Length: 416
Image (cartoon, rainbow, N blue to C red; front, side, top):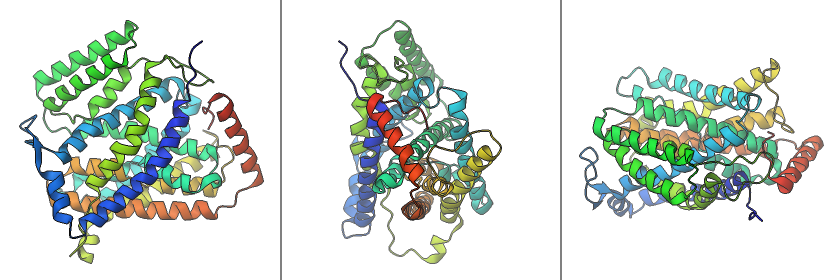
């Protein structure tokens, strides 16, 4: 008999909830250390070279570079596995399932970018940061929902996960298209050859995860040399990993994609993402004036995350439901949908990541961090308060019980 396996999405949501709480702690710890007598040691620990240069562009590899360009490639590999699973065998596999999250995520990326450009886009030096408030941190947002327990219906959690996954697709596309300054053709050709080889392995039915991980490592180095941000290698490699569809049932234990996703979910949620948060959230607040806090860059990012996300996502859902384009998530009230739209303003991991790509000036990177932390904190607090106060209707509880029973019986979480 084939060995039983747990649903990858169930494992993902459980690990993201716990990992999101750990991420909150890591971010708070980074802020505390960066504003303590240990601030210089924290900075030196991150920025002292620990290995020779891999490219002339990056120079000697520091711990900060290894985290942001190395470990985060594994994070993007995991993101790519999630995206492929949902597109092929999950809640994004049909147009009826895709249209609401795609519309909500698109509006939730466009409106924050517009708000940012209205506030900060007048300065050419700041215009490149338009994508920073467009991202949603799925771990942080799911972690906030986890603190609420049964007050947030399962359908609402699944809606948030789906929107965030579509959001991740957009963020990956933005990084590839807008944050690549120059290309080296020989490494780019080598990367293309490696990708082709990985897809040939897929077509030949090769299921050995080790071969795909080896190909991922080679692709990462080739992409790093090419000038494209190396983390994109993770998403591309993920799409080459074979997937055995399992509609309406738990994942196939022989499916390489499901096995690799199970293998990565704990390290990504409990180590890589919290470590990234600790390495990037340490903003030194001593001496910061109100003029700096209210400068166009941090205000534009904070307003984009806090106001743009909720306006874009909730507005798109409201229009879609009222026009009959899509149906409202089962068992969720309009207040709860609005609260989750607010929670999508928690940009954190992806916003910090894009902020590091958008600006070469370290002072602007620090301002971008301040705006990201401010907007994400406001979104987390308001979203939590709204969901905490939202009355749990009896019908909503019945719907959640039914969905939970479906999940426990067969792992089918395709209905949102």
